Length: 226
Length: 244
Image (cartoon, rainbow over all chains, first blue to last red; front, side, top):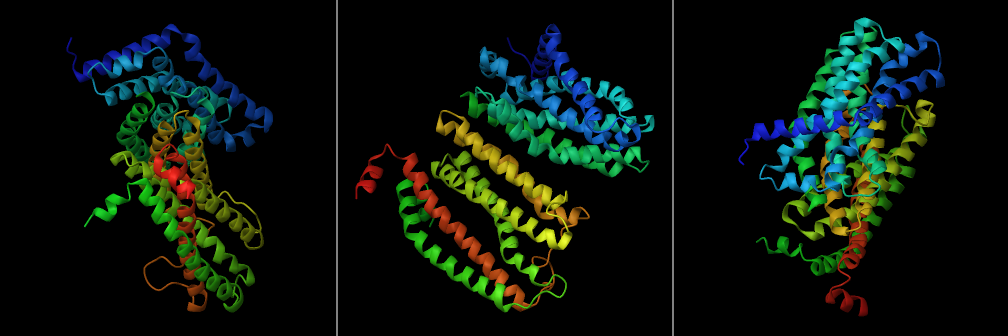
């Protein structure tokens, strides 16, 4: 059966979405983790909303980073364990295409969910409604970039038995610029300053990783799979 | 014309070259660093603002520069190893990583010792300091990824790819002082126009930098010998080299 590139990508994305909606617990766990982490900060720091507001962007972004790291471990692992990934790699479609489709599906499942929940968490942390647009835009650029950085890390650690800690060790340093600009943009929007500069930087990072990371992630998978 | 270059892909040849070069490089490094230390710590005048404490620059700046240079060398060797499948590249990369991490730690420690009297704090969350710390984490990541695989060759290639991906951090560290309004002072030496430093302070610094470069090359040669011997331990030439 001959399948075009777009159709193959569509099929893989559909398969991934189908699989994750059949296991709703795995879908919800990173989200609940995100909520728990953001709850821990007010308990540990201060219950005063005025003080929390200053830290809210950082708290939000660190929680988003950690919760997407949590789900990244599974990006290639279950498919590599049962041999599906080898089958996909042998299917005649380029491996890069498969990586793009799988990573995009991962973002659709984890990133978009985080963005949709963020206004609730933002309100709880005292972020004013006027900053929601910036917060959600920065989070959508940031989580997409993070999914790509994570795809490289997940590709490198897929064959390892205890790759989870190593995955964080690899991805978190690379994600730090993201945290700086993402939290910076939200912070500026809260204090009423134009956040466009930080948003442009985030968009540039996003375009940069979206164009180059697929090839790096593919090479990583080739190294660990073959 | 390119034969000398092709020969560098052969482990026994590289082992021999490294063994010959190491003592010479070490001697040259001792000369350059000896002059730099004496001229920098004893002869150069104290800074009009920073007093005697500015002398930390003679260790801090070369080690910070080297932390970036070594990373670039490591990433270039990794790229050579991945693209042309030259095994010696992995050996160079594996031998460089701990040296680079040590230079990064040295830069961070000397910087914070200098920061205490000058900025009033050991550590500030400043772009350049933070990105230098990220560089240390990248070194640690590359080193632990190499060790994480049961098959050494797979670990080599995975670490090589991570080293290449991490190169994006090198310009961030270098230009962080320019891009962000940073607490860390700007460039003094490597910039267009005359350096903002008199010769009596500048020459010892340049000599220290040269000395650090030579020291890195010397330590790389020594570590590379061990790395090559360990990697080629099944081959006959290693058995003969170890016997003799």
